[in-house]
Length: 254
Image (cartoon, rainbow, N blue to C red; front, side):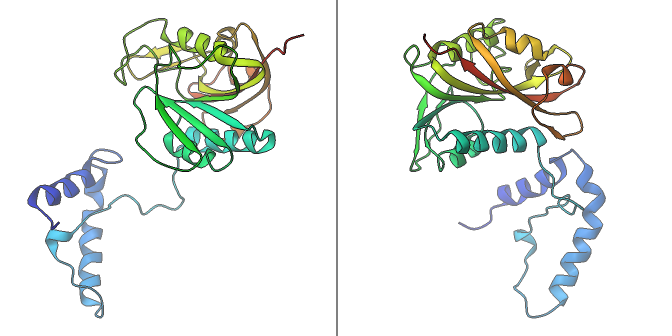
């Protein structure tokens, strides 16, 4: 399909809206200097104006990344590689991260908005986090990364429910089998609700959501975007918006 006026206009509008509105305006002169230099350099392809696709803000000294999502995915992958469960269940974490996890172990991915993807080692199903389609005490290895802070705020089409995060935590606790492990991440620091984006929890609040689980390990990505591993939860209590990563274990039956 050729370039339509709508596609052309969309490409140029997005250049000035993402990643931050209007920042791209400052780089338009450089863009046209480079375009003109490319056209005059000889031996290259024909560059037509209707095919231009300005990427104005990618010229950076370092590769940018979202520290929360980068480190939590790497953290989970390393935990699963060390423990190698026969099957892993994830609830609504980053789809890209779970696609990678499915290369380590067979993975079931449950999301309120079902993932329509086909990949070996990955089974994607729809499900409400406050009513998970899983039996009691049935899951050996479970993860939920940067999710429960959203439940009940309506952001993703879920029902408004002030107790949504607590209900989600109870469901994760319910389905985890004795001796099983939950790998959980949530925003931690000064406790508050950014309606309708997400909540930020005090680390102690997170632990209190899971009455039958024991904290085995805690790491976090601090306000500077630096990974802090294997520390006490108090270390993150004064953060503004950190990513707390909890390894929680359900007591084995005696």
